[in-house]
Image (cartoon, rainbow, N blue to C red; front, top):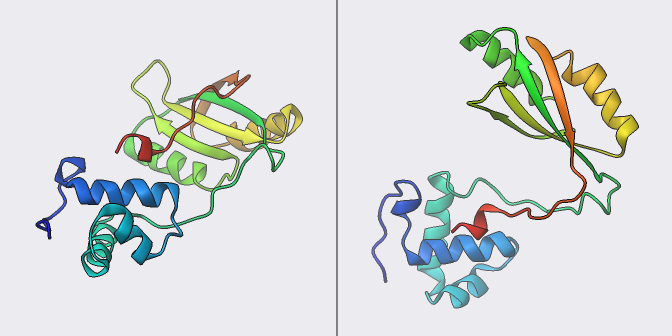
Length: 163
């Protein structure tokens, strides 16, 4: 069996850990027996590795993935947000409020001419305008926004593609 060691970022993962993550990223419901067979280890060390990856916060959880277009959520907009206050308390208030808006799929603090970039997914432009006007614009410390509407997703990938 390969040596089990503490995980120190992506560099701390050996080839078996990477195989486990790659397989789980594409099939999170795979049995431990099938996972072990796919990565070339027996069941017990595979199970121990998965548990270690979970305990160390590399594997955060398991969930079902949905097709947002099949669910009628095919309008994607990217929103630049400029804040009128960027002290830690203001950033914390903004971050906490963003987390409560389900239509905000991603939020990134930026080193740019604006403070945050949000990925917002809604049913249509009408729904987006409501979310922007009633929710995003009223977030704490928002000074202004600029919207960019996505016409087509050319590439979307998971971390599994990087492993």
